[in-house]
Length: 485
Ligand code: HEM
Image (tube, rainbow, N blue to C red; front, side, top):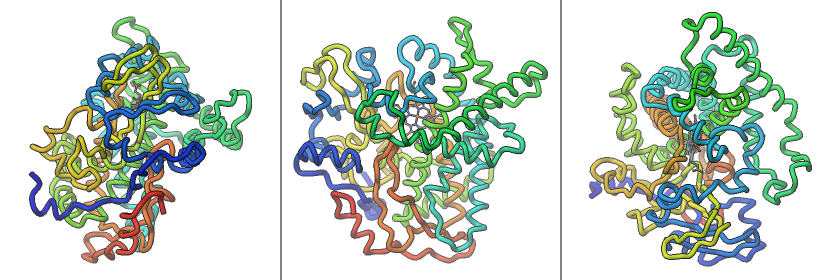
């Protein structure tokens, strides 16, 4: 049972109101291009499974926890990552863990698992705290200016990956490298219309063509870093940093003894950065936005952070349950990967429906997390659902920000630790409010992000000043909805 104070703190953050019925095919294609989040209809949220025949084949949207468990775990061998996903991400990380299949995937997953154990992730806490401290210092220098918080937390997540993967840096080229890294991931993160239309690879993608020099610079910089590190490992193995790059170079499969090839090492570096930076940045941006709308939770997190931060980084994440509950709630309302998909290899049955071979299965955390069958007041912000004892009542397959089964996100604890340490550090240092008149709206691109960024006013806590209450008009605006303002 939520306490009266917690209930009073609940509010409905911006989200499209589901459509009453399916849009026509032209409107559907337009909506999928502009913002797929606005295509969902009421039945998707209400029904355990919705099957539709679309021009590109049969699609089953599955929101039944038992059926999802079958797709992702019990009968996972029958469901492969589908081709659209494959075409969109392709390029640099084709040979990395995210896109590998069958034996190549099994070998890589076994070999990479030791990089992300609880112990290894705890070892990354100091790098995460340093990046959070840099961000706080930057914001203090910004004074009373409005800053784009979405942009800032993206910079932070890239910094964390840069530090944890290549902790010895890049000598004089750090700024160039950082710029190239941003351009690289901005570019490969864009969905090219040619990919959606399934045009052959020989037709150049303009989105990538324009950025080719930067792509080449980034990839060759990574090659040079790997070669330099290999040399150091040969010459002075004891003196070398125990970061992700070293772990990748030393990793070997316990079963076969085989290590990763040069191509696999590079593909996984690119995969970790691509899969790990925008997702984690969005979880932080949405958490900060939600807290800016909730004075009660804002103060709860700030108080917890003030109590716990400043001590040793070891075990700190475990001492931040309220901060964690806010992040979990942000991941529920705005899951960075709003939908994952698979293709059925052989016929199956899901939630009482026959599934022919070739069916595309869509599991949409965004829809699942807002299903009234599975959640109480699903559209309301209420982190207390993630505090014990309520947390224990959540069905494992009703909450999937990191997926589930053998292909569950390998970086989940890394991301959660980073988000918790950073959110705590920000909240104990600042009060935040959305820039007056700015209407925040969720936009689904590769990840689910605040459309147009997240301009916020920030005020250091020690000044004792409050930030202006969020603009009432824009709050009302959020609550109407589909399609987006
Ligand atoms: C809040 C942040 C994150 C979210 C919401 C997230 C979400 C996900 C989801 C839903 C999947 C499963 C996709 C599927 O089943 O089709 C996944 C897989 C993956 N994620 Fe994450 N992720 C996050 C952070 C990270 C980080 C920090 C890393 C690495 C440093 C990472 C690396 C990966 C990799 C390599 C896979 C593929 C695993 C496999 O197929 O075996 N992710 N992620």
